[in-house]
Image (tube, rainbow, N blue to C red; front, side, top):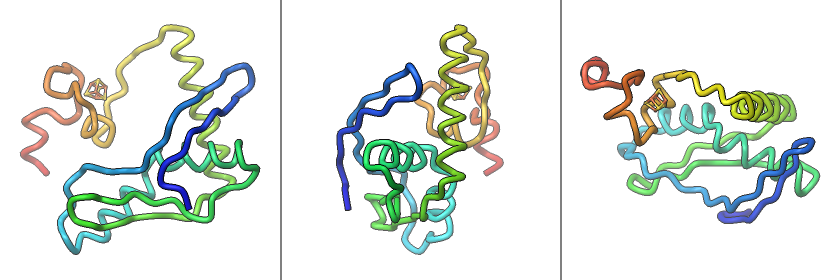
Length: 134
Ligand code: SF4
């Protein structure tokens, strides 16, 4: 089990290195296990950690999980090779967009909800009016 790890991963000619630490600051209420599981299932962060482990250790981790510090809840999943392949494709596609300097906004409820710029972004899917709906 690893809570904190350095990684250096190659995707073709691209190299990505970094220091991974698994922590979540989002407030989930006690008993909100379903929400914790959803967050883990949808987490690109966990998918990237699993892919980094596959690339560096030669195998997928048995389990990855998000731990929500405020509530003590945890949500996790067993990574799959199909998921890792999708994640690698997604990273390559996004890297290609960045190389082409294509920064077209792609707002989504999940992405904008985590974004530090959502208060000032004209494209956000999480403006004050949409917050009231949820
Ligand atoms: S708030 Fe704006 S910058 Fe942030 S993820 Fe959404 S669209 Fe992108």
